[in-house]
Length: 327
Length: 94
Image (cartoon, rainbow over all chains, first blue to last red; front, side, top):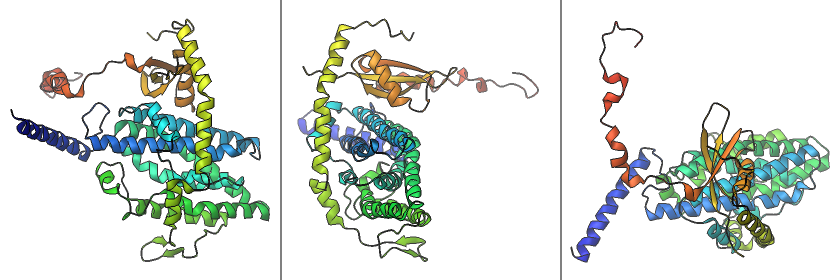
């Protein structure tokens, strides 16, 4: 067989593999790690799942800032549990991503070097205790809207991780809303604090759902692979529609003069989003990008001796009696 | 020294009477820490009463590309199922 013929027959073979693959997804069958998949599917999933994992890990930092200053023990244990969940979610997702053939070390390296992206919202500072309320209510609220459809995404390990994440996430939003509720029922100063937090987190939360559909380069392919079930604009509208009445109950005002219920569409119309700000933060010029990466790098570097010591200990105690054999 | 922690697979028994089920994986330097980490990562809300861990490199898996010869032979053996056998309607308890 000549080289040309060989290439053609290989192309045909991978073409038919791709057809089988696409048909499988169309039938809502899951793709598992060892199944054949197009290279682009693998790469897109590595990118999205690792970014998702990085977001969980970096997402611990803005809230970690307030654990030691929580106003009561009840608030402190709740916040601690929430941050611990985020560490757990990062770990589920890193493991899911590793099944696609990228190592944990590679992913850490991409995060620590600044090569990988994570959700831009975590590059904003947490200035007051009310920010813990606003983050739980708005940021976790937007995250849930993003994540629920991912429970039925086509890649098995990602879908399974997301089922677990979504189950755990609803307490995050409720604890945030409860913080806002308490502040809004408090003194004028406390209510002002809640309003100020809403003012600062509202627009970044809307941006968190991603660029508008006409700017989003991955949407079409991702919809086909069921990596996305709704477009960014649909998710954003859903978030606004469900959040505005929640703000009304708190007695807070959403910082958007153009926000108005539209009787014809049954949805809220809203003002223009400052996408220049979004892209600035994505490109690394947000208020806390440098601080977040510095904190991650320091945590990793300062923990190196612990990881090394654990390996040294493991090598000395290869057959530990204290662990029971399973069978 | 630069040595990365190996990958472990985690299996959890949700409650007595049920089998251990694969929950996910994690990195740990040894079995003891793998179990401790699995406790924190996979059972923060009473999801289990027993944990197994096994280093991922010790798991051997069948190849999905060979699924035809592996699993298809079972497809045309309907006689292994009770519904294959025809019985008159008035036969009871069978």
